[in-house]
Amino acid sequence: MSKVIKLKKGLDIKLNGEADKVVQTLGKVSRCALKPTDFRALIPKLAVKAGDEVKAGDALFTDKMRPEIKFTSPVSGTVEEIKRGERRKLLEIVVKADSEIRYREFGAADANRLSREEILERMLESGVWPMVKQRPYDIVANPESQPKAVFVSAFDTAPLAPDYDLALSGKEKELQAGIDCLKKLTGKNINLNLSCDMSQASLFTKLKNVELNYFSGPHPAGNVGIQINHLNPINKGDIVWTVNVQDLAIIGRLFTEGRFNAQKVIALAGSEVSRPMYYHSILGASIADITAGKLAGKVEERIISGNVLTGTRVEKDGFLGYYDNLVTVIPEGNHYEFLGWAAPGFNKFSASKLFPSFLCPKKRYTLDTNFHGERRAFVVSGQYEQVLPMDIYPVYLLKAILAQDIDQMEQLGIYEVAPEDLALCEFVCTSKIPVQAIVEEGIALMMKETD
Image (cartoon, rainbow, N blue to C red; front, side, top):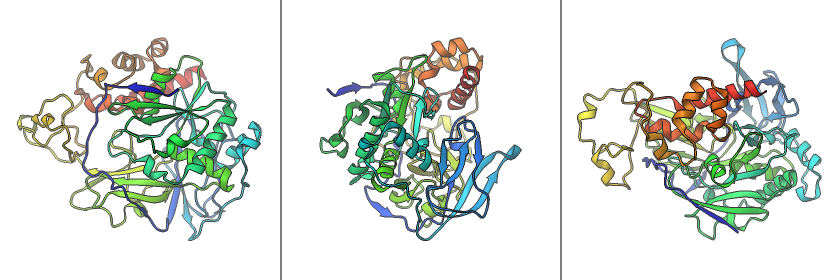
């Protein structure tokens, strides 16, 4: 029987530039890249060098600690560049794409007729395994682990988030194959979480081997971490797997087509996009290819791979993040507003109803990256609890992380959270505390101490 969870805490940030419900072909992707920095706690080991020829599905690098986990090229072509940062940290492996993608063949197969070992070997060899993440810590799943549950969120409530019903239209076969694969790996039905606003005709309601759960409420209702907290909370020693719904289709395509076909639909959105809409693209695609001729160009822009709350800033010559299905373009906040705090604020968004604009709840805003203030004392204000629908004390958790108190971190819920779950806390914080960075530090500390 389906569960219905109604969340009241949270905050919807309505921005200008929502993508039209139109999907267009982007055209030829000239370059793609995989970024080891997209994967938490990964120590990459290169499997190629500049100038090597690769097919889609050939390994670019592996996990040094778990060499069976491969990260493979989404396109065929030539390894154009291997970018490194400080202390030779591996940042990007860039592949110049062929005009037509050549695939490494793994052979089509019905997951229901394969053993768990055969499925696991196929996923590891093809490079789709990193799409399976595990909580706690929101890291690439350990293939030797056995989770107590698997969760897939089929909707996103973040600002300007893509509509997965539209993005995955006609992909029922791939989605079902992905679900069958995960069920065979775990022996459990998949928790497929939907929005109460989705119609009964949604393609997700027709899938088998799933337990449908419905959520209503403001952002972060679409975050899988919030959903896990309300359906099957994580305690010490528990392991839960999560998969993005578009990645689920890519996993399924490995079995229906027998190859690593990393094509996906992404949304190009934001107030600085001339016509926001959806595009057929591919994992790790060049931002220049995605945005070419599509930006308004009236002001200096901030390009974000992902949403404005949790995404990563990228340059125009950068690349789409591994887990991202959205590119957002907003104005750069490189200006100062004289006496901005004293203005009436009819066109300003406020989570605290400080400005009269709260009287127009459906109004959309053009927001930039300006902080409108500097960092201040970190005090208990009650702001975080109003936007975090989890049964934890966020301020005390953050202070335990800053104090590096492992016992307190465990008791206050470090196993249940990822930085994205507390992104709204950072947005509403009048003290300008870098909440997500602190959670990241806490996760790194826990992994180091419990290794």
